[in-house]
Image (cartoon, rainbow, N blue to C red; front, side, top):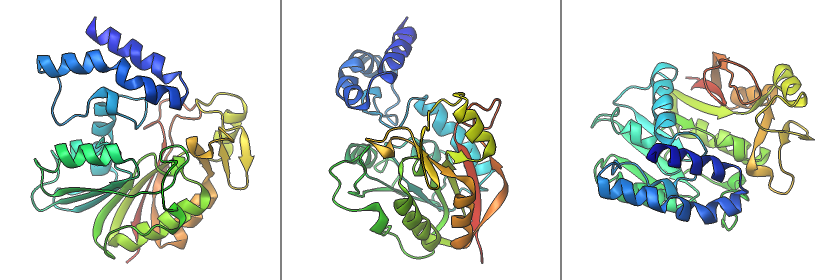
Length: 285
């Protein structure tokens, strides 16, 4: 019964506009969060349901899913230096605490302060090699009061300081000029032969046909040069990019794509690896 109530709340919240959803979420999950805390059900290394803002899927399961992609597809080793661009509220960091050893290092930054604050208070004290920073960057969907532009932001890390950089559901919420700058920064902080794993909504012939046939979970109906969006008033809500343009950006910044591209199911494909499209690349040495 507890599980059913939790699922029903999640489904109801999913259908609401983001502004309403964020306002109601603390109220909707108050009872289940309190029960989890008092009964000892909640893992102290997991954020309360009311605080999670990084998507509609199962928080724990998606984190564990991507840990396997990091290891199997990205060849991540336990002693490497990791950069999590858009760390949210620790969805990827939490499973990595079980994988990275004392010689490994994790750095993460995000534009949502409550996510960075929670991670700093709940993860770093237990795992001192995990560090989180706030980047006060403007994004109409996630941080409408941000002070800085993503198109000019410099990652707060040294050149060639990371073995492995990943971005999960970041470029799906960024406009072209912002994404282009982030590509430059990713290449800058990666060590030679370092790898990156990045998720996208990619537009190719198959995806466009499925979107136009209304098979896609997201209706990318507004078409611009090189990309599509689902909401003109808030473009960053979801953005899909032309696959060839994305591949050219990898090449431009010295990042060699490791074939194949792992296409996702977002547009209506069946039996795919994940929901979003995944590209793995390595920095040319």
